[in-house]
Image (cartoon, rainbow, N blue to C red; front, side, top):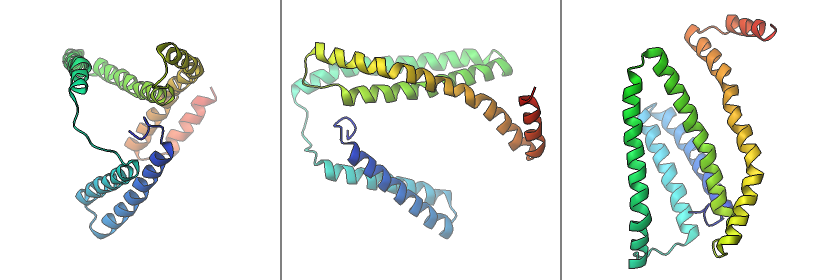
Length: 197
């Protein structure tokens, strides 16, 4: 809500409050109890504090939806919900079918699908930016022009950060070797020999 209204300062302050309270509660909880349940409660309490802070400063007025809003919810919300539900069902079916490919091929499928989900975070951030920048009260032509300008500016950066995922591929490979072997000297020396080839 705060990002959609363009109140990024309030959003940033709430994040600062969240992380400060989270670190403080985690330290106190870990030093006194060393319990994972307490750490979970600390995260929940910190989140509630940041939400209450945002709601208090936004001064939102809660009203019951009128008939027009309910019609819009039914008109746009129901098809969107059905689309998400069907997509999840098909993803589940696809995962079941892919599991019969064998361990190696299914592992490759899981890795590729995880990469797709990671790239979706970038597109979600792009869409959130559009929601902030596009003027709500302007005409469709002006909104379209604004969206196209932002698209042209963001396109090369989206490609750049998408390729950044491939840079993590060798890093995660050697990190796994370091963790499983619990030795870093041999792995690092092999990596240096490989990089000089």
